[in-house]
Amino acid sequence: MALKDLLSLGMVLPHRSPDPFSMDEVRHTAQRAEELGFADLWVTDNTLDHAYSLDPIVALTYAAAVTTRIRVGVSVLVLPLHHPVHVAHQMASLDFTSGGRAILGLGIGGAAHYHDFGVPTERRVRRFTESIDVIRALWQNDTTEYHGQIIDLPRSGFRLQPIQDPGPPIWLGGAAPAALTRAARIGDAWMGSGNSSVAAFGGHLRDVREALEREGRDPATFPTSKRIFMSVHEDASIARAELLRWFTEVYRNADALDASGVYGTPEHVRQRLEEIAALGPSHLLLNPVTRFTEQVEALAEVAGLE
Picture 1 (cartoon, rainbow, N blue to C red):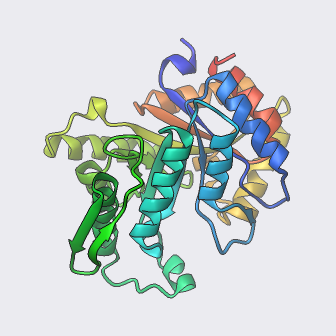
Picture 2: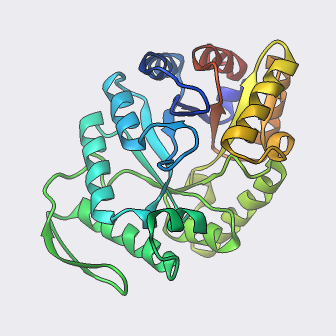
């Protein structure tokens, strides 16, 4: 059975790299991913970055404009660094202009994120959950009023509504027990990070399912995913070198190469992806780190999409 028959597959756009990239490469990747049958296109949220990095909403708006069907998502936007009204408006606009294809991935992030932007770390979980409440309220109402412990929003107008009802799905990240429980309680889906090990992902997936059952939600209808940093090449040593450079220079965690990354020949990559699929996620986000115009073709072949 082909990988495509086991679960849906997403593709990452060129948007964060130690080397410059072109918008021709972004356009080609987006259009070929759609033509080949990938389910969605994704970017991350990295503003103050040591790598070349596109703004996620700008990148997704461009991708939506050069495609017609494939969904477009960010995973994850570190929500407490943004005002929820701005996020609600950006994503409603993206959903409207894309014809209802937007996905919003959200996370809390680490302390360094807050320091960079001068945002207090105190009560960040409360800020996070209140922000989600505000976003969902704005997506459902022409006028909204919200008075929380942290966010205070006077009665405000918000006429532009997303095409998706009740709004773009909100995918939550995080791997801490509280984050997994929170995803099951208030999320529409959960995605494991590319930095988490494959071994840990299996346990996180089990914990999410148990939390869903406690919440009275059906695990079978709750999307789960994992981002996988990867490189496929007929020469396995080249694939390893490409991914090692990524983990070293961009992710700055070279030790995660073998625990979290997938690299090697097409046959080896297919086997590794099938092993991850056997853990039971409903979706995998394939994140090549270079040579995107080649990798989108190679990965489609690996997955059986061609």
